[in-house]
Length: 235
Length: 235
DNA sequence: TAGTGGTCTAGACCACGGA
DNA sequence: CCGTGGTCTAGACCACTAG
Image 1 (cartoon, rainbow over the protein chains, first blue to last red):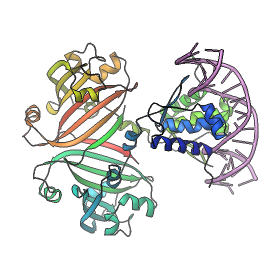
Image 2: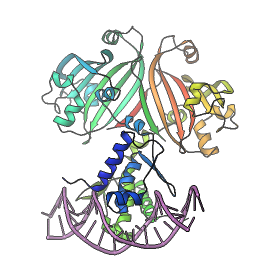
Image 3: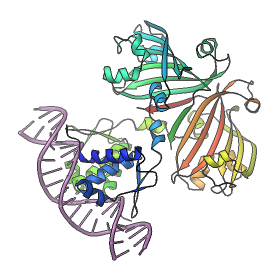
Image 4: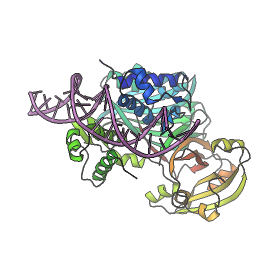
């Protein structure tokens, strides 16, 4: 298992940025200096720097030098993160409560969202997820039995994305989300402990694997005072 | 004005993909073939291909070859669209009503969002935007006077993005949006013609130019029954 | 085994920025 | 002017994939 030298250089610079040894606007050593420091050719140094520029860690000015960028934290957030991961980023403790867990035949709507044949079975799971003990969202998950053969409550109580990636060795690709505002109905108001008619975010989510198959359909309700949705969009 | 050879190679391949001469999954010639075709070194070919891979046009498989990617269309759709453009996509007629139009000194919040010095002037504009005659959103725009020297009501009544790109010749890069659900207050309820406390989407938007400067800060309220927000996210 | 992309070298000339 | 990054060469060896 050899690690290529350009990756070693990349990682070392990345670490320094993360540890704030290199701060926004700082000039890093020139390509010729780095070439000497690491005992590699200039092209290898450039490969490392190119990757860091593409990832937004650095930017270059012809004739001047290479500098540390400041926007990295923001860029990370635009990716697809699970609720657990999102809350970890904010240093908040996640707890999950399973309100129901059953296997049923997919309804027409769910079958359509999950690309299932009629009569195929799905798990239907209701969860209430809290951050630092405060209920933030109530969601209903639909997962194809075909993909999740031996799902248990304890798996769902922890991070589903972690289970999919680490245990099932499946590769999550992208999701389509629809976001709207609705007034809380009786169920939502009960589960989240908020007043009836209080505004909540209703997000439905269809998530797909690398092979193009959808593996989850989720309908979730977020407490407006606890959650906001940040996104980057490029023109 | 010399164009580097790697860019020529890049552009030629990009064109072929756009004209569908190269379709999804097609294997493109090997790096050694391209090297011969264009009479350059292999590193130069790789520079061209690296850029196309980073832009999502191609993907590589070690030992197999380089292939044309298919996700370009999807990537387009997730991009940043103005309200006018979005509504046009859905074949809905947009009308804008200007509720107020003034120049004022930026408040602290607005100055921070627009990277302005204290005391700098901004336009503050309130618009109600309708699709097919139905009010969909009420928004307050803040635009730096420094960038929009001669803004008029009639420009704002049409598409601002169009004016920025076609008239001012500025290049819009990306936006950061924050989306939350709130209950309509008196103002919102009046302008959108909905009941008080009805759930609405509150979206604030900070949009940036290619040079990194923010050019608008917008706070908008969308009618929940008329608008939903769709987005793709990649893992 | 042959062909592919992944990594790497030791040079070179250029254009730009600042002193 | 010198130092910077931008482009480019003509090789090399490696790891992976397929027949």
